[in-house]
Image (tube, rainbow, N blue to C red; front, side, top):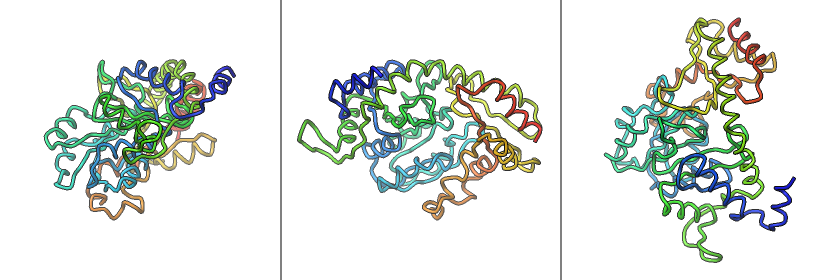
Length: 350
């Protein structure tokens, strides 16, 4: 294991060692962005980014995401203000964002759901009009582009997950994409207890640094991520071919002009379809195939959020409809064509 030997010989295991610096530079080049800060995981990245840009109060966000999106707000003493989503992209509906802004609103926290970009231009226009920062939860959006532009260039900051389940991973890890060098300097201090230099502590912070082992793994993974995304695209196309025309099923597609990373393959089962989403989910499980009702339940239904004024079902009809009917089928580079056909057969014949 030459990389492990190199780490051992350097005598630097963490705290911004050579592999850490090499991975930050390589990611800037690969993702076509100028400033990134590696962090130990994406949740810590969200907590730090919100701390740098946020100011308490209410933050407009989506109920249709992994719970880390909203939990990062609680850790900053902020209150989620849930807004409904678009029926095709599953992302925050810009029209509803504008209607939800109040004097208590301090930021907007959208999610690029399944790696499909939000309407970044509409959100930027709204944010500028109300002088609000936009922090994107881009956990699933590694390498995604809108036209010729990286989706990570949008907003005041974006956070990307490098968890083991993601398209690109370092087992655990992530990045905060910063809009400029000054923001990166603030984030870098915050991820290291607020330290500036060897001894001085100049601001609040926590321990969110990525180890040299994880960074070295990332450099290895970066060599293969392109081929992995290509394979994911082939699997995506095969699923669509097999499921086309299946009664009561819909396979949402990214908007035109988007280069996605095929991180998930969601299908929607029409309400009232027999068998329904849950029956298909159970049937696949009986055959040792692990699909996910992702994201069900909604964040707004969880105990710590369900009593918020914005969490009522009547305020979030689209999000509830999607959460009640969505099923994400397996998609990963090692999935064989034969297995895709088997999964599709089980879905179609259900």
